[in-house]
Image (cartoon, rainbow, N blue to C red; front, top):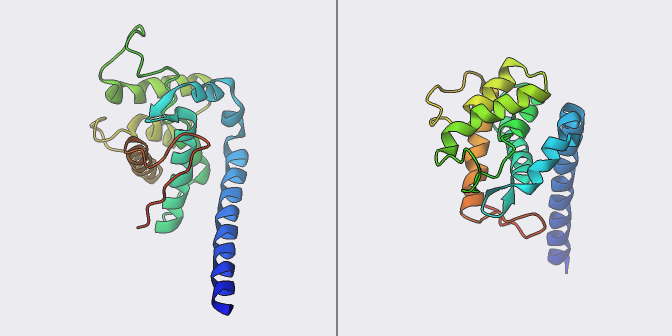
Amino acid sequence: MKRKSEKYEKKISKLRKEYEKKREFYRLLREHAGDIIKSDNFQSTRNYIQHGSIPVHRHCIDVARQSIAISQLLGIPCSERELIRGALLHDYFLYDWHDRSRENYQMLHGFYHPGIALKNASREYKLTLREKDIIKKHMWPLTVVPPRCREAWIVTTADKYCSLLETLKLRRGVGKARLRISG
């Protein structure tokens, strides 16, 4: 009996830690990027699919969450504010890149969307140099010029990780179960 009780307590403890991590992440989102999260254009990204069945909105939030996790896990000092804001805006292209009937449809979306996202984000927000670097270089090596700041490297890494999970369907759309990969 005692063994079941210990397993139960460990499970509860793990769930509490996960809950606290999520709670802290959403606090950081509200603190550093409340204006972005509430904006009509950012909300509209719920209408566009990024990879698999994941909306761009969910993808950007996942990239922000993974960016914070990478920074903390590796002990990389950086600006949480710029890291979160850049991650949220890295795919701020505001169109359905899968729609072949769309005017100006580009088969080379991967090459062009960082510049489009930067232009859209710059119209709405006063961006720092780091935030611009994150948005413009997150598709490296497709962008050729590598990121200049650690925040951009972190978001680039988090974006590749999230995109891989979404593309391989290891992470499903909102409301569906998510598989976890242990490392």
